Image (tube, one colour):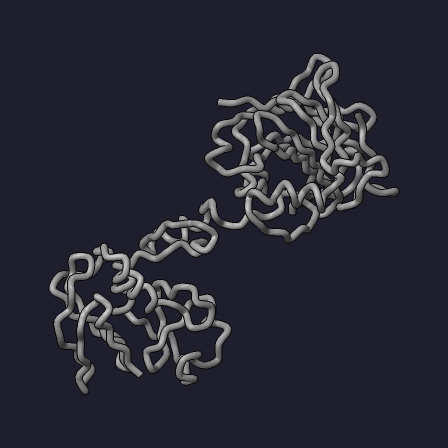
Length: 360
């Protein structure tokens, strides 16, 4: 079965073919040698005052006129501590070194973590921690955008480090920024950013390359988005399919995209052509799973180009759409070939690629 190019003068993103089926992502039945589809290019562009802690299970403390701290702190994560935040900075009195002793009491930990909330974006202020002249904190993302302290309206001053609060921060378990999306993980600040980069509750972006689509949502919403917005993408059923990338000789950067459904999952096949130096062109082909990284580890894919007494094959684990394909293409961690190789396997400017998905 074949689809039509997305436009009169070449590929353009987002237009439905004239003979689009009633189901936006239409299925194509198996034929001899596996289902076959014409893979239509989507378009150019490539992939392109002071504060005293106490009373709430944290500790009782008083602040003297000279900024010292006295009082009895309760046990917080094995360390008795009293913390006061004032104009002269933060003083910490403890029986045991606070560093690397995360609070074990959930309520106490939440109380401590709340001290690090940025008054502008309500994210957490993490080391290196800078303060204004009065000792107020603001996160590193908001600070460059401010001309005065959002709390006291005083001068932000130079880069005044609050070393005491940095030491306290090393004892606090901070919740993941995607807590509201369902992540229940809390981590030390040294581990927080790395976790959030790969957190499965991080919103998914539209997996279509070259379409400049800025959509974000949950994993469960991805297929619905593709069916409603990117209706021109064809879906084939089966673990062994063949698709045809049409008009591979088109100038400039072009992307071809197709969906494959098998084993109860959906896979997105991407063929991308990039313009290199001196007009040199390269093709990159890769498969990504509409699913999580953990789910992707259960599958393998094989891409194969066949010609007269020639064969070019690539086998790998599919990428999760959470990762995207940009880094894989940048590192050539996919099937890579240039124009001269493409012409060895092309037929009248169309390139057929055999795609096989298997379970590990």
